[in-house]
Length: 316
Image 1: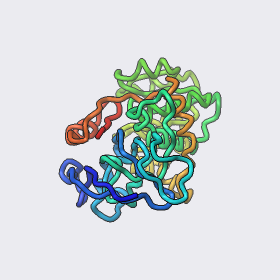
Image 2: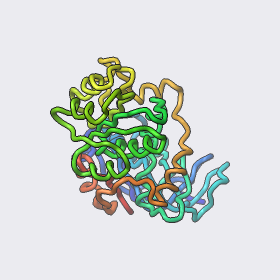
Image 3: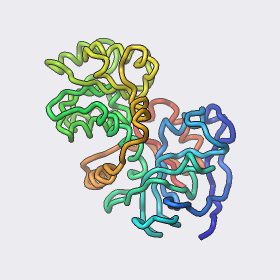
Image 4: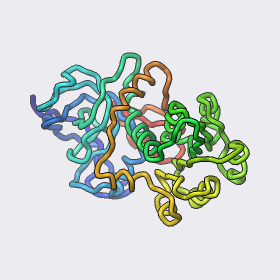
């Protein structure tokens, strides 16, 4: 094995993504112990990628973006025996320990699953982070079959995934969403109502009784947590992935606080199950647009717009 030269998208200083990111060439090393290297086929972009540019989880610079990635195994490190060169995998880039990440021609991965037959690489590449965030947060909430959960912001991709996961777990789901994905969410089996004025009354009317939990996956917006507490009646039954400050000030729960307090991120093995469901058409994450790597600026602009209406993907 030997290092390979790769186009990569990375930043040398912290700041707004479009100001600090640049595409350049660098050497991607051989994979270390417990790692693999892939020839990247697709990279699903996430809000977390832009937060890395802004200083979230600070580390040595330069560093890359593109946490979610799929591609063909190019080299395997020591101790790896579940995949071989030539296998098609999806999962997480080793973004914290490498000067490059998934938005590149080659990437080092520290977590992976085989892409099942019937699932194309673009759709595989958008699964990891939305599934982890939605699944792990629903686990924190301990939603049981038959209970009613309100998912606020279900038109976003974490919320869109959470609706499907909660329904598969036997929960009754009420979702707030705009018109873009309302029909999809209703087809899954959720009761759907728009955001905006009157939401509290509309949700109560749909519920026809108590709502056990509220999961806030909406974009940061003042008043979201207060409205959900009003609906549920108990701030400890409201969990957010986004409106952290308001939640903490009002006694609601923040998923990342509890995940970090547990001393490590939970197991991700359920990603393999959901990849199989995606391959069979029983789970889906919408794709807004696929851009070539060289058009990363247009991809970033769409993702950063706040309303891409699906996942934005880069392909080398």
